[in-house]
Image (cartoon, rainbow, N blue to C red; front, side, top):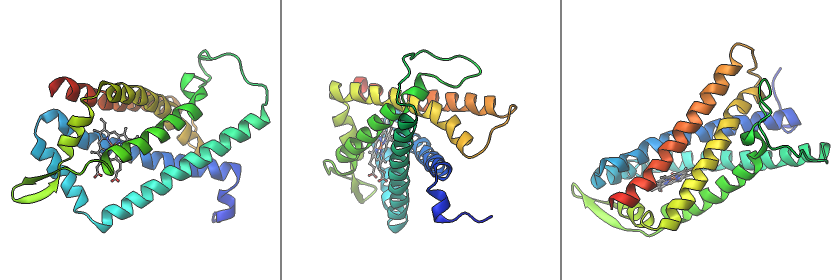
Length: 225
Ligand code: HEM
């Protein structure tokens, strides 16, 4: 049966949208890490040329950014609505914070989704202000003038406060992804005794790898330069 826009705004529909939007952002987070790991190669020209290639995509990049922003906001709004709904349905809060153990998937990650989500939202806004709309250094590589993101990143990660904030935010990003990945597949209806443990393990592995990758960068830049 075709799904109308009104069907999507039911509780199940909202979860569906939040899950799909979350997975789109996950793809961005993976690709973005790949690009930023170039910082570990100590080759400013390579890092700047990579960023310049992306910027050169022009309208294609703007379209991607618009889609990403829309999905990010959709995910944040729906996540908050679902959280408020769940609280209204269960006004007496749980007192236990401990891991509920198997077969329950109630963990520190799942209980803190709203808080880790809020920190990631604040992080992303500040991150865009710092990098995307931050100081506009330029450099010439192979005769082409481009934005010097490498200098900006090095300058930012010379500040210990910034590095610590990134580390904290990345731990919370990892926690959010750990539960979010599995939960997204549940919301999309992928729930099978054989696949669910695999998806849960994959989510945990991805979350650890991504958080680790993003944590290494500011620490490396801080000590290297
Ligand atoms: C060490 C970690 C990171 C570094 C060095 C870094 C660096 C950058 C830089 C230089 C830009 C500007 C690129 C441009 O405007 O073309 C950027 C954009 C962006 N970053 Fe990061 N980033 C990091 C982590 C993250 C994380 C963890 C997230 C998400 C949770 C994130 C989300 C974004 C977004 C959404 C943009 C805008 C992309 C666009 O408009 O095309 N970044 N980042």
